[in-house]
Length: 462
Image (cartoon, rainbow, N blue to C red; front, side):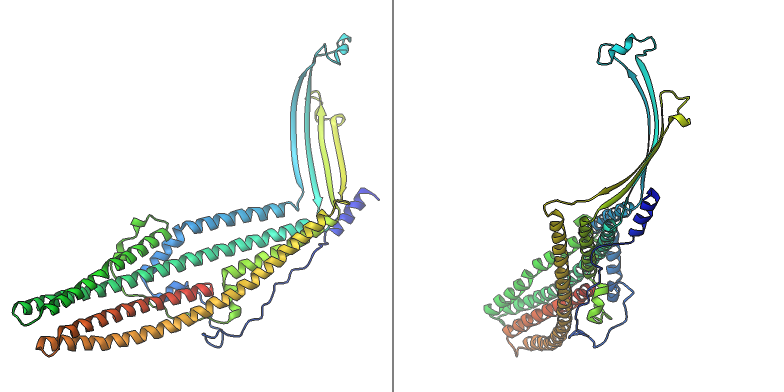
């Protein structure tokens, strides 16, 4: 068989790829979530935090996306995966190199070739000029290299999905921290309002005590009520400070940088328009599921690359150059040299190493498939839990606000009754304690309801 015929056969066989053909798995999912609408919702085009309609939160999210260090690290990992994918594709193509050499030699007259110095034409110095260009190509007859390229491209896609997942985690953490901050600030304002009311009540009791119209017990109870309200302030201030520091770090800045608009209390933002869609939508929107599926595809391709180890590897090599002892004759036909080679390398006997490599690749694929299935189940669990939490937190907040309104009226009636002398101070302080407790719970429920919306957006993939 001529060399041209061998090359033609090799090129014909290069369309063959051993190993299993990848097919994306299709999980069996319910048509709708229990806590969601029966049908799929329209695709969301805006980022989830826009649903809160809060300009301060929008600004924080923009800064975090631009400066967060976790996102910078994830983007760097994508660069690594892109370089690996490029290298895997480049391995399919021929490689060429050039080499130029200008050598000088000075021979010994006492060495093994020293006897040549007795001849009249002997020269101790010599020059050698060499210019060569070579090319090599490993023909991917059985598709092992193409499987490696497939795996590298799938891993690059998985790295891109990991970046999207990191972006989702960062933006969700920013929204969660911001909501908690506004919750602490609201609870702090309520506590400070209660402290001011208790101070006024204490002044009134002390005045009546001095006039003999109130007992020592009432004065002590009023003092205790004030101190109890004061005791709630430090914890609330600590909570607000911690969330401001957290927001600064998420934005890639030192903790002391989180000030400005955050120090001014604002209402707790509430999200609208976050609907779960169908469970099958998660396969397209959840970054972790996309990454897991791409890693499964990469594992499948690596099985094919391992199976290719059973078959021979075919390579072509060529060399063209000029070699002369003088520059004048360097690029002449007598100084020309050429070489070509067809190589075949086949692991015929390796004590089962290829078997072990294939078994290892199949085990990695099975593990990736199990990991993907588990990720799908956990994603559905996350959405169901978030839907339940959002619904129940909203109901809790609604009930607490109704209780707060009723206790406001009760507390005002108690204060009026005490001022008129028809009710005791104990009844007033008891109404104060109940009101403060319910107000604090209502503020906490509002924050938890908004945080449940963030958790839902996180579970849905943004």
